[in-house]
Length: 149
Image 1 (cartoon, rainbow, N blue to C red):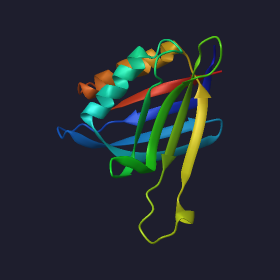
Image 2 (cartoon, helix red, strand yellow; image 1 turned 180 degrees about the horizontal axis):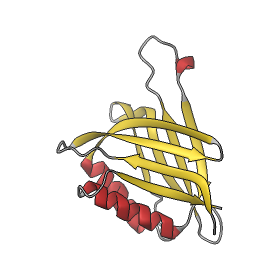
Image 3 (cartoon, rainbow, N blue to C red; image 1 turned 30 degrees about the vertical axis):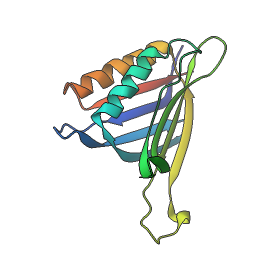
């Protein structure tokens, strides 16, 4: 399978705080966007565990989402990552959603957002999981998941 111009880049800042602003860049076939949201370290660790267990279609599909919450419910998503089944051969599809934060009273029509999807492989998801684990351990700053054609 050939690499495609599609990718997901997650940047986790080197910091000792339990809660950090995580930046995400999604790019696919001429479209790209970036956004950020605050995540607890445990949320990233849970996402990594989900990535490890998503080997069959029966397993829950990994998801990570952040933004503004009200009553423990996400009401304005600024970063959304999902790994979904793509086809009967078991290839995963990555869905990246990023959006800007619109200041209160500015109007929703000033919001910029991108939702992009691309196909990848289970091996690429495993490499992304390993890179993200290394980033959490302080051995790097970003993890990249490449798309495949």
